[in-house]
Structure formats: structure tokens, C-alpha cells
Image (cartoon, rainbow, N blue to C red; front, side):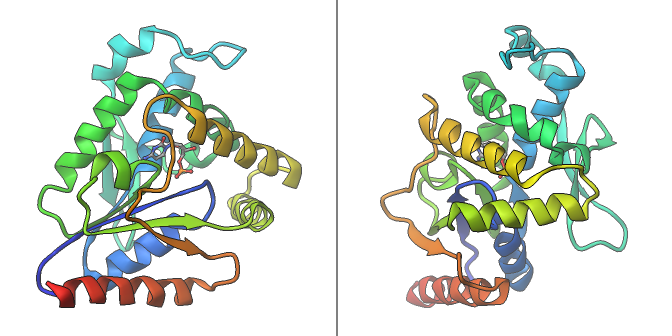
Length: 231
Ligand code: DC
């Protein structure tokens, strides 16, 4: 496994992409990039700057303000994972809130937002040795990635997983709110005009409805091994 590769992981909301992506990155000593966090950070910027009206429409002013947005990932001392920073502020908790989740699909459908973030993501992957998860990684960001995974799981399981996650973080949500958010995002993410979520023709499907995180990691590790041994 000497030659570093790019691992692109796409899929529906709350399929556990980041859990498996982080685990494989750690096993291979690769960089992990959560592109959803980047779209969520831009969304938080919009909420804070009054760029989203009561009907959920994004103001055109966002385009001229994109230059004021700086997103970084920084590791906190003693932690294995990196936190998301928006203009030097740790926004890791806020970007995971249901309010941000309710607006993120609309913000991520803005072509100028996608252009900016895709460019940054491509730069992060220049040296390979990277695991990136999102919705368009295997189709748009890295169409030549050596390994593309498309993740899915039943909507019921995804709802319960995300519900427990939000509850554990102290968010005051109901199962119904979470289900609606997931269904809404699936629809918007797969139907938007620019880079909709779709399975790349050469992606392998991972349906993890009935798999533990450990089983998923082993499944993915075998795929990486097969590619690296083949080279
Ligand atoms: O992975 P996530 O649930 O944190 O992503 C949040 C939203 O960001 C998702 O509903 C759609 C958008 N997104 C995107 O459009 N493209 C990506 N590469 C990653 C996320």
C-alpha cells in the first residue's frame, strides 16, 4: 500500500459516510475531509448574515460575500478528529444543528458556492492519500479517484441513527423532524441542477443497513488492498 490513492465516498444523508471515512483514513494514515461540513459552514454564514429569507430562499448578496468566507479544518489538542472553523471560529457544534441542516441543501445548490468549495477540495487532494466524503466527490471533485464508494441504508435506519446522534449532542429534536429533514435533503440533493447526488458509474455500493462500523471498515479496507496490490 505504498502508493497513495484518492478514496471518494458519496451517498445519501446520514448513511454513516463520515464514520467509515474517518476510520479508513486513520487506518491508512490518510487525510480525511468532510465536505458536508464545508457546505454547512457556508450555510451558517448565510444564517448569521441574514442571507436566507423566511421562505428559505438564498439572497443573491451571498455571491459577492463568498470572498469573506474562510473555512478550515483544525485538530484540537488531544483529539484524533479535526473541527470545522469558519473565519477563525470553531463552529463544529453549530453546523450540526437541525437549523443548519434545514437550509444546507438550498445553499449547496448555489452554483457559485459549489464552484468555490469544489476548487478548494481539489487542492486538498492534490497529493492524494486522502479520503473525502460528500455527494459529488466521485462524480465532480475527483472523477478519476482510484476508489469510489456509494453509500446507502434504509431511510428508517438512517433516521434513527441521526436522531440518536443529535440527542446525544443535546439537541431538542423529534424523530419526525429528523425523518422530514433526511427525506427533504435526499430529494433536494438528488434533484438539484448543479452536481446532483448520483452514483458514479464506476462506484462500488456499500449498503450498511445491517453492518457494524467495524464490518464496514473491513469491507472498505479489502477494496483498498485490492486496488493497491493491483498497481
Ligand atoms: O454530509 P452532510 O450531511 O453533512 O452534508 C450536508 C449537506 O451538504 C447535504 O445535504 C448536501 C450538501 N453537500 C453537497 O451538496 N455536496 C457535498 N460534496 C457534500 C455535502
